[in-house]
Length: 351
Image (cartoon, rainbow, N blue to C red; front, side):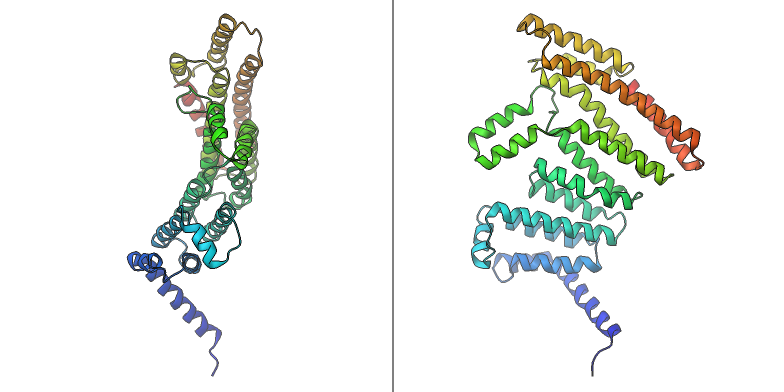
């Protein structure tokens, strides 16, 4: 006698639950993989099945990362390709793994709201499998745009975009404000293959201010379309912070000033009058250029002074945006969030 659809659904749910329970017994599953009894790729498929019913299961995500680590070990991936006839070189296979993991994370995030475990796993994949390459960061920024637009209250998704933007910023500006990424790129070119050289060249050509501007435009569109969502305003704060940080530090890095420790302190502590402080820094750097190499009005000088104007203009546009929201919105929460954002801007710039 054939089973009814309801009975089949119950059986499937029991099987998936058993799989989830198996992942909770991690040592047993790990032993099967390490002994060669269980193929790691098949284990990933089992995990994907378990996540369809238990998308937030921390044990499943933790075990999944362990399996991926086995796959990306130095000798593990080529041997698996030979045995499984995957027909791809290691780099291509890793790229395929990244794409598969992105799909798994997207599906899990869609099944469970604010699925922090899924988004944290996605960050781990970008860091360890994707190696924070610019191409993957930009691809992820593009591919998650629609998702966050449809989930404007899901902070986890916007936190992921903040991670992507911050990682892109890190490719351009170093934390100590003393080195330029180009130096690292030059060293890497001497030791890496042609493919790595192409990747480094790509990293140098990223128009980060453009991407940050586009992200602010996305915030504006979503805030206007979906008023009263605090997540959008929090995300806007983060994007503005990155813009401000970039406009303050990137020009100084491009001038290749050997020692800027005292200037760095000025950058972090003189936000009361951004235009004035930035202009003073521009004059200091100009003086170094003229007295040292006598290069005159260099391209770097132009870039520095242009950044001052962009920073002031960006702040003016933010205040104008807030005024527009406060004068037109009828949503009480929207007005409250806009007023809080204005207060944050004043406090942030006064630090």
